[in-house]
Amino acid sequence: MPETTLHLVLEKVEVPYAEGGRRPDDFIVRINERRVGRIMSSFADGAARRWYWSVDSAPGTPQDRGVALGLDEAKQAMAQRLVALTTGPRTMRPGPGASAWATASHG
Image 1 (tube, rainbow, N blue to C red):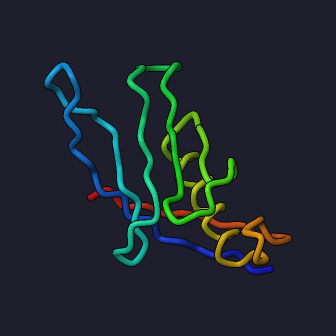
Image 2 (cartoon, rainbow, N blue to C red):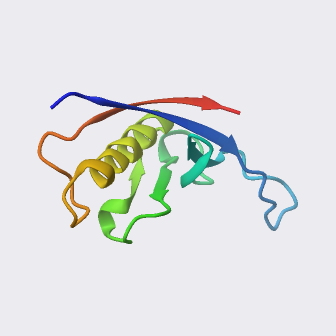
């Protein structure tokens, strides 16, 4: 099966939190101007930092969200899930050989 390339556009979200500052890494993910999910970091720094991703229009299974060690890994995991949702069988499970490479621009 040929690889599918998705161009994920990350749009920074400015969300205030209790201390009056801003969460530094919180993104809405778009494909062709359509919101498809969200990627955000934990509050921790360094090795303890984690990136959480979720697909908005998915059926809400555990495969529709995840945790990654880096932003690139989170983008890759989200892209793979989006390809599986759009090319897999009606059960929304990944089809055989489904894969993706994600590119992203931060706006």
